Length: 169
Picture 1 (spheres, helix red, strand yellow):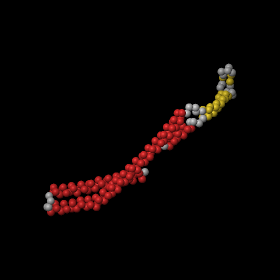
Picture 2: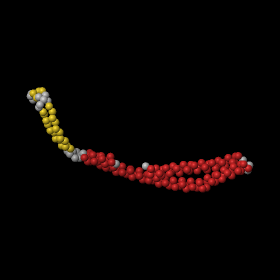
Picture 3: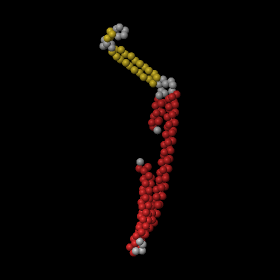
Picture 4: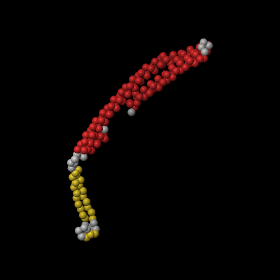
């Protein structure tokens, strides 16, 4: 945005007249163009004054207008990106809050249930009430619950990182 504003200022400055002043001094030795012999003590001096007045400034005005339009476009894009970031942050906050509820449910009901299943299945296998196939099926169910819990923890951590990231920068 600043570069765009600077470009507008440059284009405005191009509308002002340009004045340059020059001074020249030199020495020639030998025969001059006017058939006169010149020595090293003779100096030739001149002055020059230039005034540049911008006459055709339609292109300059068009560039300034284009820079102004570009500035508006940049401002709109910036606002759009801010809104998208806010929406993404809100979505991750909602996901985070949902994940907190899911984790509480797992920690209060699912994991204790899985632990109870393992304990009961171990006792039943030891007493001979179930066979190894039934025991392994119960273990698979309990371990699947634990694995699902770990996936929920990862999802929770990812959402937490996304919620906190904008505040870190």
